[in-house]
Length: 82
Ligand SMILES: [Zn+2]
Image (cartoon, rainbow, N blue to C red; front, side, top):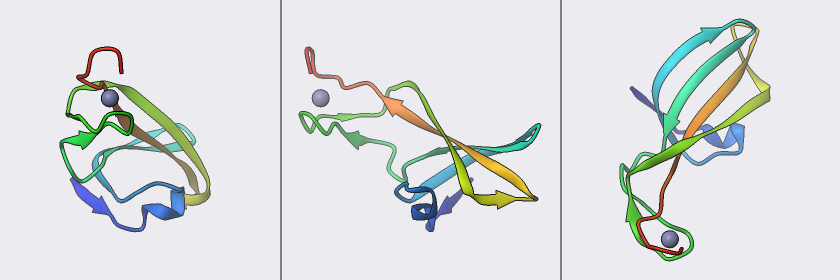
């Protein structure tokens, strides 16, 4: 696990990379924000419960001449009805 402090290259905030894999023509990175608990942008309640993963493929960043696919977790807000 390591922190990508230059994640703005991908249009993302700094990330902690939890895993790397080669997936055909892509290099897959599984990542999360540095903080385990993240505040909901709607109601400010904190959550760490993963709902699913958002995928984004970089067209500008290459690793070993392969495009990079970044998977970042999406969390569930604990507030009912938010
Ligand atoms: Zn919320």
